[in-house]
Structure formats: C-alpha cells, structure tokens
Image (cartoon, rainbow, N blue to C red; front, top):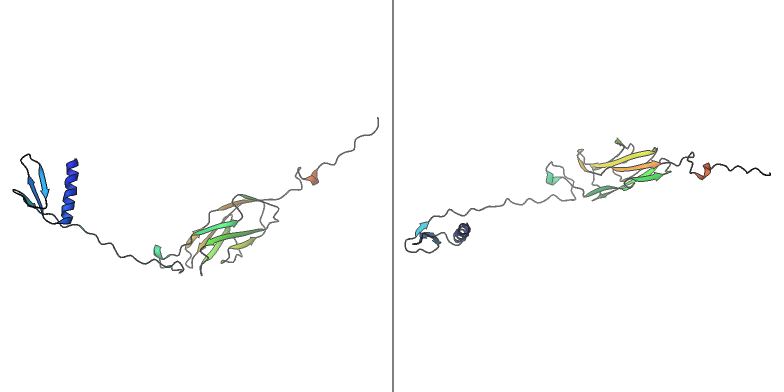
Length: 192
C-alpha cells in the first residue's frame, strides 16, 4: 500500500517536472519509473495536467447604497437591531399606562426604509416610521410582547428584533402589604 502511494507521488512529481516518464521491471519483478530512459524501459504517455480557472470576482455592493435589484449580494444588510428599553422580562411598576420604547440599529436607518413596531402582535398606530423611539400610551397591566422590523421600499423585511417580553404592574390600594391598608389598632380596654 505504501509503495502505491509513493508511486503516485513520484508520478505526480515527474508529471509536473517533465512530460517524459519511463517504466521498466527489474529482474526481481519490481516496477520502476524514471524521467530518464534506461535499458529495457518503455515510455509512458501521461495525460495533460488538469487545470482550473477561477471565475472573475464580482465587486460587492457598497454598504452605503440601498439597492434592491433582487440578488442577494445587492440587498443592504443591517448588522444589529434590538430594543434598549424596556429590558427583557422587565417588570414595570406604576407607569400610569405610558412606556418609552427605544431601539438601537447599526448601521443607521437608510433612506426609504421603515420601522414597524408591534405590541402583542398588533401594529403600533401613529408611530413615525423612521423613528427608533416611541411613547406607548394606554398600556394595560399584565404581560406584553414587543417586536419590531425594518422594511425596504418594496416591503421586504430586512431585519427583525427578537421578541421583547415585559410586564406592567400597578400597586393596588387593596394590597394588605400597603401601609395605607394596615388595620387600625383598637385601644385596649382600660381598668379592672
């Protein structure tokens, strides 16, 4: 097995160095190859070496352009899109139904691209589509999920945030732990 590998390497090396290869068998039956003729050697015809030409490299689209010609290389790509506020699984207390949502985007929002924000899978109405900050109002108590996406002028979604879960809590005046709800102490009976 080792002699076959050695033979293959030898043939490859000789093919690279020269196109003439000679083969002969000695008195012990061992096959030899050489690039020089010797007594009783026959010339071995080797095929031409296989070559490969790489296709020309196409220049990449500029990151600052917003092209949408349909090819994957031409679509502008954002690197990062995420929520800054609220934080994941944050519990918000006594916010009176208002929450300032802010997002970060790298690189900056390109001309013609629009931000869409969804609260509990419903689009947030009245949001300016080129803003990364918005104030939500009339936010009810309970668990909520925010998500956002950026679309180009054709409506193609370019990037999405991961869903952001948060909850809104309100201190209850009926809560027994509220100091205002502590029972009024009754005076101790006096006398014998």
